[in-house]
Length: 232
Length: 357
Image: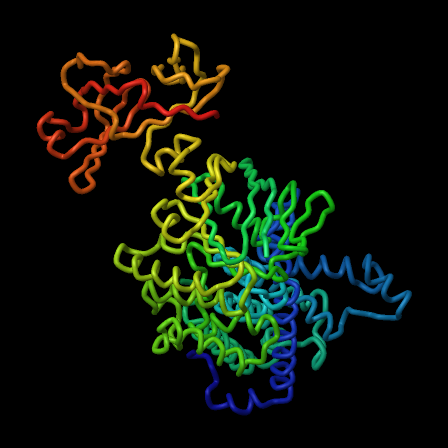
């Protein structure tokens, strides 16, 4: 707080670098949260409602990105999607000419990778707390599976869905290690706010403090918006 | 219209085998103690638990046919289910709950809400239409659940323990309401209960379920006249002994049960074999001294419970075999009967009615 250059703050935060990074950060985090939810919900459903051999293993793999250093996650993503050496990446490049690294899509992928476990955990908790017999009751009342999902399951999971979205969004917003390793630090394409802070720290320390302050405020707003729903 | 059930359903290691039919315009009660398989059977008929064997049909509509791998999913069955714990949707108002089955079938929202509101009005819930389930009293919630099961005018109404969650006062009121609604419902009506009073008031025919199988079906009168198991006998308040009748002398036999033997009449033309002996509790005489009379059956045992109904008391005795005696309250006081007191019980052989097992 004390090191924040309040006199220059307006100028710094409206600078080209900061605005571009902010816009990119919001796009990346929102997309990552949306993907985490869309892919996380079916996965959480399978983990809660079905039994299959190796379920414990699958859950461990899903949670792994949460506990491993993000930079390692970035290395892992490079190994998979890198243009030259990546298992999938080289194939994508040779056949379709698609290069993921150093694109916004790579930043999204990195952010999704680390925020996905949080979404799955929150959605799993929500599904576990749901009385599945309400869904049974709905189906005896003539509701198709899709209608049950839309009118019973999802509404009853409202708070946990909000928690899943907000937590994964916040995690994606703060993502640094995996992004800089896998997507690089290109202004306007992969330079999100945390990357901008890192770069500015070496050139304009004041600017780094100002942008950091912005991130702290965003994080604080997120926690307030949850109103203790997830931490209760 | 006829519902024909002949299935085996399995939940975990528990297996239920049941066969019975239910006609439209008639109320059938599935009656059985807890753990007899009632809820499993409800789930199967509702389509939530496919049977492992057998068929369920509603006239020409096949709901389940395990041999041919046919299973109509619950949402496509013309069945309204009322669940024991109601399962009202907590996030929807009373009106929205009742409108849910209509909306699920594609009825436009305004029409669905109108029809739901009309039904709630008929059930005296106009003022509670906007309330969430947790704001409703037990009796109100019960009525909302009933309305939700009835709103699409199903061909079969399945009520699972509709009164168990209520206190005594509300139970009587809701029971009357359910009786009225059942009377005006023209489809097949099935009520599941563990309460014999509820069953005999609400249903015309009983299907007794014990340990996962149907032990007896019939009208309450038929079951009263000839209960075929200890449970059925308990329900209608008589003693029953199942065992093998062995020839003792002319006109009399020894009914050998696993829990003690009794002397009973030998039915004319009977060839011997397994039978059920019935004995009315009022025919059992209690005394503190060894009785010295004409009764052929004299047993001794400790009193395990005494329940008073008006001027009569039903005394349960842990004798061999165990007995229930019905005596006057005055006798209970005169003999000083209470739990733990050892008493003699006697009854004449001719009072035992022998039925083929």
